[in-house]
Amino acid sequence: MVEKVLAAVRLAERLKYTLRHSWLSDGRHESVAEHSWRMSLMALLVAPHLDANVDVEKLLKMVIVHDLVEAIAGDIPVFDVVNDSTMRILKRKREDDAMKQIFEMLPEINGEEVERLWREFETSSSIEAKVAKALDKLEAQIQHNEAPLATWLDVERNLMHSLEAYTSFDTFLDGIRSIVVDEAKSKIAESGSR
Image 1 (spheres, one colour):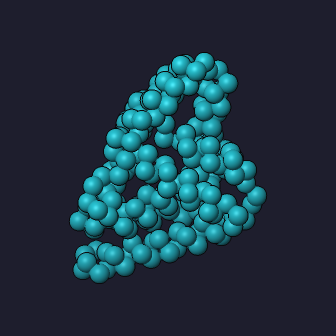
Image 2 (cartoon, one colour):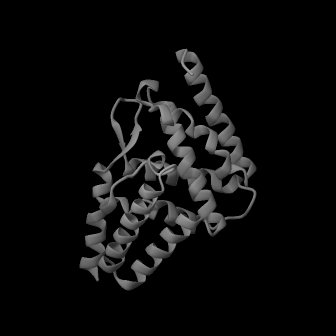
Image 3 (tube, one colour):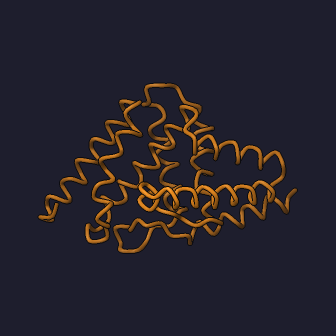
């Protein structure tokens, strides 16, 4: 059992060097681990302010494991799959296969919990999953806002407009969205671009 747990911890190290499409304010790519860490902090800070009561422990666990599959499958940015059903199917298959590997790697009790939390996040089937999904999207936009505008792809200039679909269920999260979107619009306006 100890060896299995350590194997999963060692697998998670890959998230420290698996890069996301986002850039940091210091000019380097963000890692998946950095994204997940800040989401965890956000979850802890926003939980007391949400409209509904959430199980904070469950929320934090979900945030911690939500991108674990990317240690095997890699990061596939949302804008690569939004309008491409073939890529969406490929991403789902790669991530499902990765979760099967992770499940088999772990002791049964851990594998069942990690898989259940990950699937719940993917389907947004609980209030904790909806909050985690909103934080995932908000953190990505916050990171974009902190990075130089020159690092934004054209498609990333429009992603802010889809955030409301993830935050509208909660006034506090929607308040964060409003500020973050205003910051993005100001950043674009200040650059003189559209």
